[in-house]
Amino acid sequence: MSQTNAIEVAVLGGGQMGAHVIRHLADSPLVSAITVFDRSPEQLEQWKQRSDVKTADSLKRILGDPRIKLVFIAASNDAHKDLTIAALEAGKSVMCEKPMATNLADAQAMVDAAERTNGFLQVGFELRYSHLYTTVKDWIERGLLGTVLNTHCFYCSSAWGRHDLWRASSKASGGMFGEKLSHYVDLTRWWIGDEVEEVYAVCAPNVISYYQVHDNFHCTYRFKKGAVSHLTFMMAPAATFKGDPLQNAVSQQAGDGHELRYMVYGEKGAAETHVFPRTIKRWEFGEDPYGQTSAWVQTETWNPEEDFAYFHNTHDQALDIVRRVVEGEPPKTSPRDALESMRLCFAAEISAAENRPVRLSELAHAPASVGK
Image (cartoon, rainbow, N blue to C red; front, side):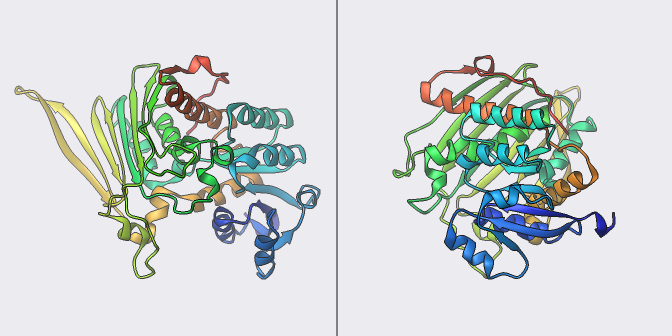
């Protein structure tokens, strides 16, 4: 596609995530200009010092600019709903970082706005672009694992260090599940391709005393066709990452308590994704006169410079969204598909708070098929 099709893009929120998005957009030949908006005058002033972006000191200027066709929302979670709806109603295509919103009603309102305006809305579930996880999806679709019956994710990370970080605020973030764990709920839905029927989650008391959100979760999802997924998450045991400039981030974190590992079991085989050892493996199941057999048949690995392409591919996601908007294609993940993953997050928070299983039928339901 020629550069004459290039569009102007705006990024709402110039913090850490917004900076990542801007770096990605700079690699797209389909982006002719980038405008940054942030509510913080200090943050905006820093962007004004750069020659590669434009800045706007009011949202109204961006929404009223006909040259801007697409906005990326990288603001705090509590701002997602209002920014998304305002942009859609202004005729802009929208990419909103996960989670959609801090409560289910707001997330539903975002979907309603996308459908009412016939607008483009994609939520940032970049694991659907990440090579580590798309490899498993490919194995499933090729029938190498058979019907997936069981998945387990074990995730252990260091704490967010600052006492005043908005992500640790229940009001601004909407909870740990939406802010951090929604990726891994969405991923399992995508792999299994079925709707969840019931959620049960429990949390131990927090280790991190100043958090307003849970720093741990043990959660089980039961799908309608019988599959079960379990997520174990703990934030605190891993060593705090200080960013040694002489080491790759993942290499520095490996072996110090950080863990992000998935086991996926099907009728015909199994897969393991393991971030810190940089491996993905596949087994084939069989049967002989003695009994069940399992053969380790495939291993893939990657180099440190490929880390984020493998497990958090926000780069390819950003460029694909721009391409889809330019070419008039729908989102890779539909708004209702994203909403279904958010329902699972809110169900887990309710289950942990009320100490009981939560059936998805209890929550407002918007039927969604799981996209590819």
